[in-house]
Image (tube, rainbow, N blue to C red; front, top):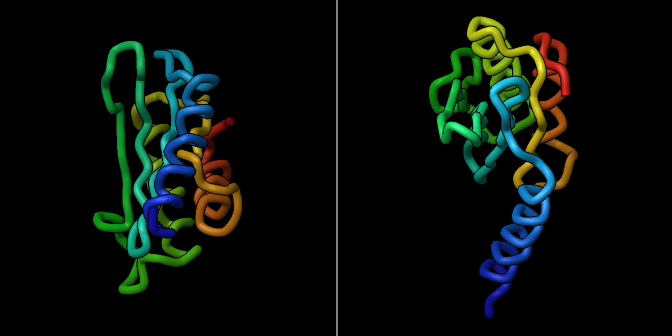
Length: 120
């Protein structure tokens, strides 16, 4: 197995372990993060109903600029998801980092979402 494939397999195993413990409910939906090399995506999901309540990414975020794979762009996405969530009446969420380490872009997104008014 090549190195890239083994990295994906390890991340999937971590993601499965996290998803065993975290479930999105209507009162406290799940804030799911996915990052690629160029972009970062975030969704607020109600797992019981199987619905995405709101989403944001660097592909559609205004102010992310032409550099979308950095911490500044992740912070813009965090503020955008917090704004959409508060407009939808969501205040508390369960943070699902998706198997990624809590540092860098994931941490910048989480901090910006907290500043925007989300609690997790």
